[in-house]
Amino acid sequence: MNRKLAAMLALALGALLFLSAQTSAGELETIFEKGIYEYGNGAEIQYRYASVNPNANGEACLVIFLHGHSANGSDNAAQLTKKPVSAIYDYLRENGTHGFVLAPQRSAEKNAFDLPELAALIRSFAAEQGISTSRIYLTGVSQGCVDTWNLLLTAPDLFRAAIAVSGTPRLTADDIQKIKNIPIYMFAGEKEDKRKLKELPALKRRIKKSGKKPS
Image 1: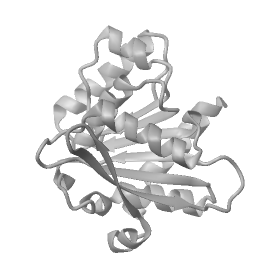
Image 2: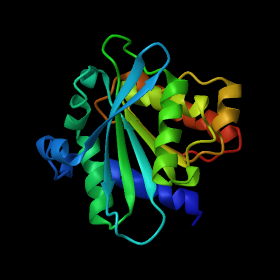
Image 3: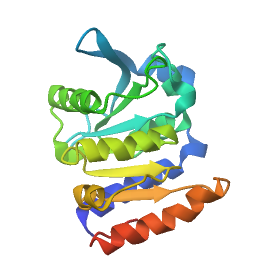
């Protein structure tokens, strides 16, 4: 099996464990450290991060989770209440994987990430921890799914694979060419609105037509 695809499917399995996440948000607040990435004119991105299995063998990976609208704010904590953070952390921990989980928080004032700066934060964090860009994975839910697609387009060289949950982007042919070599796992639940359920298969067909096999 292609190594990229194998790695992506492993992360997809972690995503599917959302409902069985074991570590509570309260526990995550004691485990995840706080960080602030500052840039231009006092602007900043607050984030939380955790090191998982630091003594395990093998090169470390980095998994970034982008939350939905309900976790917007400035408390640098609400993003930890979302089940995917716990699921990703538990998945890495239980599988003995050496890695980091990074969970930035979207500002309530701006209601959007500055994508070039978010990419800069990820690059800076990876460099500080000695993580190769061949070991960086991205996932997001709802508005975080929109951010995931936009961040892939902003920095397509940065990510090994991505998981896009509950969102269908409006990709141009040029957009697809930018990201066609990145393994991307796309899915939505049966209770999603009909537009998303209708557009997701159409998007997969467009990507497949470009020469990439979507998952």
